[in-house]
Amino acid sequence: MRKTLLGWLVLFLFVPWVQSQTTTAPYELGVGLRLQKTEQLYWENGFTADYTSDFLLHKKIHLKMSYVTSRIGSAFMTNAVRQDNIIIGADWRFRSTKNLQIFAGLNTGFFNADMEQLSQFKDLPHSSLLLQLETGLFYKFKFPLVTSLSIGYNAVSGDGLTIPGTLFPVYYQLSVFYYINK
Image (spheres, helix red, strand yellow):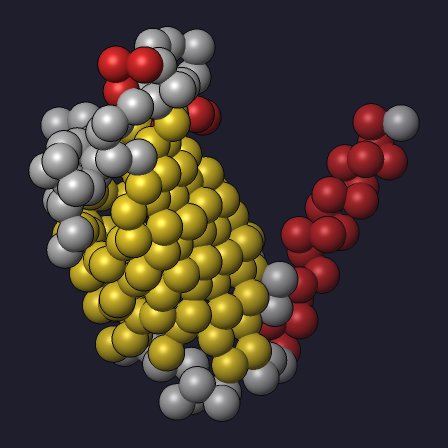
């Protein structure tokens, strides 16, 4: 049973790699995990996706979507505030034909802090729209894994009165993608 599973896993990883070496696909779709650290606050982890095609200026523009949460980060089995981020955005890739790429992007989305409906927190804001600037590095390996390392800035930051106080301005992220068609 284990040998069969290992065989399927090798085939699943190897066939797309061989195809990517012999042909250039008209699109690229990556799905993966995102690890995010808010400066002086929480770890927020989650899932991410990245898409581009020849139609998007010959793969210079990448569309992305992420869901990150402290529920599987700092708030996992602790008393930290459970917060969720749903993010969509677009990046411009410099050196888009090279393995090491530099990117700059703009993200938007929705932020929600779950204060567990405690009476002392009922008057505090719990949600906000997001507007983020992000820049970083993107590296494509020879096999269908890709990694991204970036720093971002939340233009909408928490003040505790109108925007949740746990929405800090600076964050760092590391993403690892498996590319379905690279």
